[in-house]
Image 1 (spheres, helix red, strand yellow):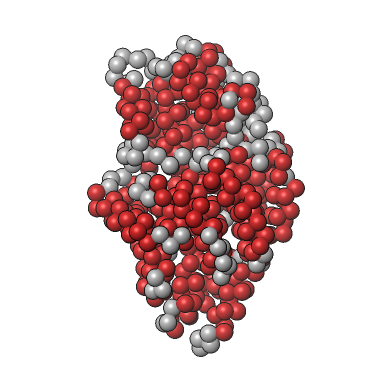
Image 2 (tube, one colour):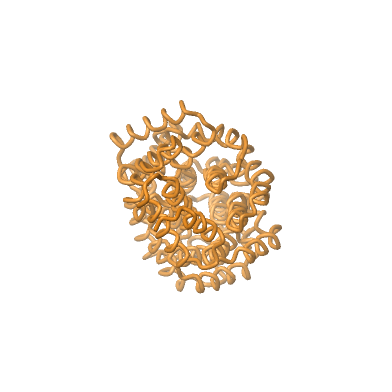
Length: 470
């Protein structure tokens, strides 16, 4: 949980130069409560959790523009809904924008927040981030602007920007300010995604010293241990701190995912399956966190296990049942390819065909950042997975290899996108072309250079050597 539960009223926000246009202290406090839960990835029981807080906030002052900004932003950045798939969300966005034209007195900062959320809703994610970054120049302690940029840069694959957006404001914060401790996890994650592993480890541990239940700092450290090949340390770390980070249920599933991929790296497949069955799948079926991240974790785990030759049985069916309603969302290319994994894994050919038709139509008619990324990278990536599933391994290699350095643009972390590296290696190994076998060897040598302690890489290299490619 957060160290901050003394919610700020209107005067407290003014004292921090973050004036809110509402005159309702209740609304100001509920805004703080929702922001804190959003940043901390947890449900605060004293205010009924995120959904109840959101409902109470909207009732406390229906015209409170920053309340609308926060509620709409949380919905949008959850990436499970958009104005194209959810009419109620579109109405809510339109209502928020009307606050700027009906004579409501709002600050310039609030005005900019409204514009940024509208840009995000319309698909212009990069432009929205520009607005939030500009807000942070004058208001470096605006945690909402910072959180929105962090999540958005993650979705865009803008790793350096994710790191630097925190680095610019961190010196302007004071340790006693509410939510200060969460800056550590944010900064650490930006550092690990730009390969500053030692500094990322140091900063994440500082975050956990400030708040042992900061699941994002836990998450950042899990990434460090993954990227540096310290699987045993990762398993020990997550198992011994389980009671801390599982209090943040919105991120718990993802941290279990990290735990499982340590085991997959080591070839301990049953341990990974146990985590899937007892922790990940249960959350997906119950919609415990309500976020797309849980679904992506489930599909990624099963697909990685399959690439390792593990029979996952009928586990794909539950995941597909949750995924299928998102087959025509096309909010993030990263989400799309994971949704496709589920239909392929569950052998739902009709769903797969509809998905491919839908994404092709989206590329033709869509607008905004994700549409461009899907056109350049996402569609080919999805086509590669379909080809592989059909036994067309040579075609899968030919589709993915030319764009592999562009896959970062679909977003996600380096660890999450590693499934595409493993996929390409697997396709190259199964291809009938000897030059693809040599490509697999080259990719594995590259992989070993980046992470020396990598049992999975060693196993795959043994497979390459058995092909006698020279």
